[in-house]
Image 1 (tube, one colour):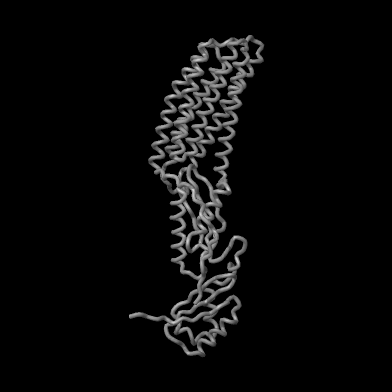
Image 2 (image 1 turned 180 degrees about the horizontal axis):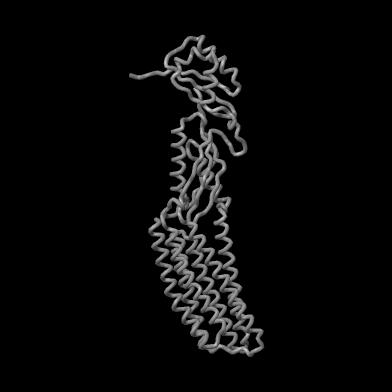
Length: 396
């Protein structure tokens, strides 16, 4: 009897499981939080821009246009969310999740553009040679209102983003937080101008621009890394590897690869199993791995499993061996095998370590001479490492 046994030296790392969120719930939550953000941004931007002109505060006007850019970005998020949650189709077999990633890049680029415009305007005003006006005290109230509104919007958006696991919503939440922080800078600049330092107002505008540009760079780099299929962090990949390796029937895991698409993770792996089990048992093991992996790590949307009888990560020792058809044709062409052919019901070939293990299922017990001559013929074929004969036992 030939067989194999399972080795496992891995211990599963127990981490809290995340709640699975349906596609419809994720899309609905994204739409709701984005509409709330759009409504508040509309009010805040109009108030800041109008207040900035009325109070002669360049920082407040800059912050108002920054808020206005949020309003545009909110509509980008809504549009991207609608497209990203469409079902997979012939042209997009992996779904449309990358649209979320692309939208995040667009948000980053928009932020960068706003930052450069604010900085250049404030810089030009500081060095124009014209006396800088001192903002009226009421400008402080406009800045304070913007801080409160933006910080509330940040917490609301981030809480929803974590619940539905949306990188795009997280990006938009940080967009709101950057606005809140920039409004704090604006508040300080306006306050400083009240005490006889009018240059603090345009300086505050430039500081806001630098903060916006930094946040834009972070968003663009993170989203770009996803677009070029950057894998998960090493510790996350190791945890997935250890979990798979501990599943019954898996002898080794190699060539495990991961990448992100929107809020989901795609993975593929080669699993080494006992080389002598049936194809159907190997398929059963792969199904078990996929089912348990997606249950344990809900972020994993799709898993591609490749079943191996041996570790083929660094070498492929069996790739030059003859196929079943080629091997049987060679055997049939040898006169010494002729006596056994009538008794043969089926062949099983095992490809392992660069050799073939050949098993013959016989309908009846042949003569010793027929077996001996067939075995001698197989001995002359160097790629055949082992030859086994089995007789069917039929139950009535």
